Length: 537
Image 1 (cartoon, rainbow, N blue to C red):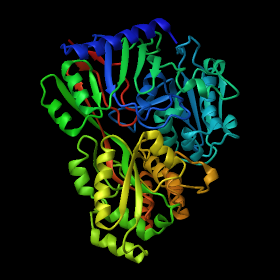
Image 2: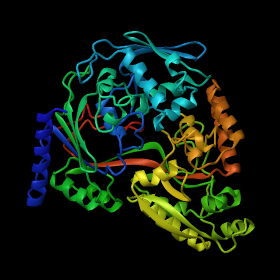
Image 3: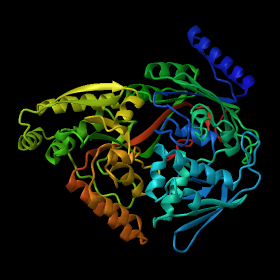
Image 4: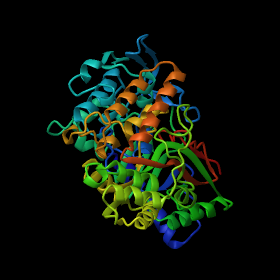
């Protein structure tokens, strides 16, 4: 850690806090960006195991990817550390040529060996971010054979199983597990054969436009410009991310100029700032989905009729999307995101208490039952859970809400130890139907030992071999129109088999910022890269 940088960053934080207490009209420094953001779900910075949206904005600014997706045309793959690549005619090999002259923050050169080792590390540690690679056929045992450097600038990825190579490129451009690590620096901090996992929890070893100075959990994170970046220095000298969860505090500090950007604000506060003269609202649709899920390991929810009663008839889709989700999400009930050719029209599920009661009675629960709803203790999750609790009660289901941190809520889901969860996830980063279907419902091994923790299908203990086959088959169809039709068949199977998870809204990422911030372009897949952001005053 750079001590002088940390001291300067701490001094900045102290001055900002002091300004807030004094009530003075403040302006953040011209060359620094101060972001108010909730870090409740930021648990680790290790690219092999860091999950959730909160870590993505840090990863895409501290690290570089081999390729990047265009923020406006997300199916367009652009060069990153790799300045070119070739896909073999049979689609089973992708050969990347890395650009020369790129350096890590340590000064070490970026090589193809670093890129190969970074992907190998993800599979060997077998944490959450290994899941997409395992779905392509990679394992801890075969990854060194299939992902290898043939020289300092050539990386070869041989696909162990037939798949759509576009999907692999999309994953390389969006997954936190695809960033390129400084192998020498990480291994210098290895302890007890952990491949640097302990150290990378709170540190970084990247080549991105910013270096990580310090992260204090649920307090503050500091990044400084890396002047040696291969694209040239970023326009900002420093980025400060402050942990803030109270919408009114965000509104107050943004209005006064104590922060430049605010995320996670409530709808009324966003509306107020939208009308303010010095601030503006930016929204971008993300592929991530808000959902309600039940555990099929629970005998009650193993019954398809109970799942249908709750997920199709006792969620007030219209009310939630009209009153809770503005600026957070848009109405969507399909497992394939909006905007893709394969996405079917909405099925139109609505609150239907009478229909739910009939299904519950047929399943042996005429008087309902008691259950729990786990939910992250912040908007809009708690509001969705409260709505769900009320509609469940109309059918005789007494649900207690168990609010908690992201680690508590999703940790219980990863351990398959829950009843009902209101959550957000389901892939969608890659602009491809397989991204969401793999994350939401694909489950090739329902055993506890499989530990497919990044697949909601496994987390909810729902498995349908036919659905798995359809998802696997659609991925291999090369004709675009036929592939879209195959994914539509997957969605119809999803409807008929009633999986244990149901999308209710597609995520909208909304930030409110000062009008003097320039160059901020919201990204549907990896949040915003800040290298071109600056201020015009």
